[in-house]
Length: 436
Image (cartoon, rainbow, N blue to C red; front, side):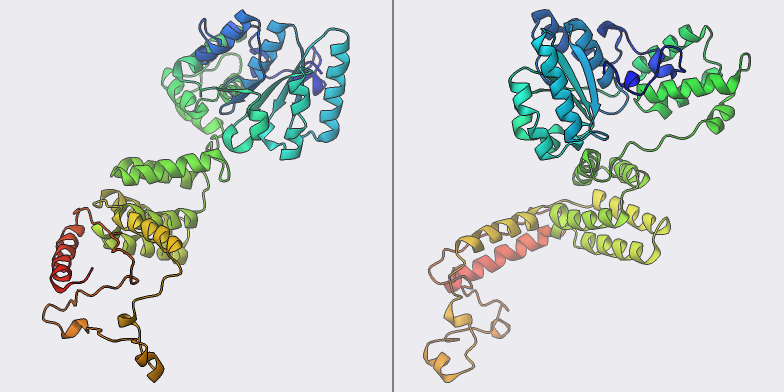
């Protein structure tokens, strides 16, 4: 199988999509990936050294992963064999390896291109190892997901990961120019429609060429489409967002860090991206509650209340009405004073509890409901804080023999400033009264 299109049974006379007809015939024709295929690119240097290692291509859809793999086989005189992890199983892999071993016996190498390689399970990925190690195949895998999470460590250690970038405007315009040259006329749209067309492609070259092909079909031989005709005649592209994959974690990380960085505009943008991509709003609501405690804490005690109430409002109203309540919370959290003191205190207290989990509370703060417990000193010497002049007894509440710990250290932002002042005052009372 020399190409994915041949595997689909397409002959030279069969209709071919514009994206296939414009598929580059040499690496120098690939657009937008100069860091890999330019004069000083990683792949260019590999080819100059005549040493092509196994590779994992990581990048978004429509940026040239399949094309580059095919051209690498051409440049290195390897047989190009392609399989897709979506449609293939162990039997297909075994057959591909058998064909590669057969070619090797007659002096011909194989470049095995595996599309969506992250969809193979651990056992299937392990099956590649002996054939990659022995050189039966040069593996080129393609994935839209982070290889660190989706590819087995053993296989990943035998491959070089190369990142492909989403296509920028200059690269997309070059694809439009190539389409115009192939069609023999300019793209039949008004000038002001070009920018929206490029925006609709969102860095995906294959999707752009599909749009261009639709435009030529809509316009016919002579018409020029207006902007309204273009926007109404073309289907809006679904957001590039996977609710369970790498995009999910990237975007929630961006939202969290924008909130932490006190940028309400960026926070709203990432929140909107996730909502528009189909993310579960209740997942976002839970994360907002977490941000309120982790990054704001007692610097603004109302932040947790706002986030929690926004979550309840969404539960009552659903979409789209409830989304505004969540957006309200996003803005509140992003503009609130920040402190992670409560978060740091909780983590430190948890570590200490795990290290000293067998220590008993000091006897003077234990209740003594029986005579025997009183005889053993339970409750002896306890000072009732409300009966003291300051309202604070200054006693020790940590286990006997355990040095006093300082977990919560307010940073003085927002509401934490008076809290810090009060804790300093209490520490003075404790010191005067002999508490720890």
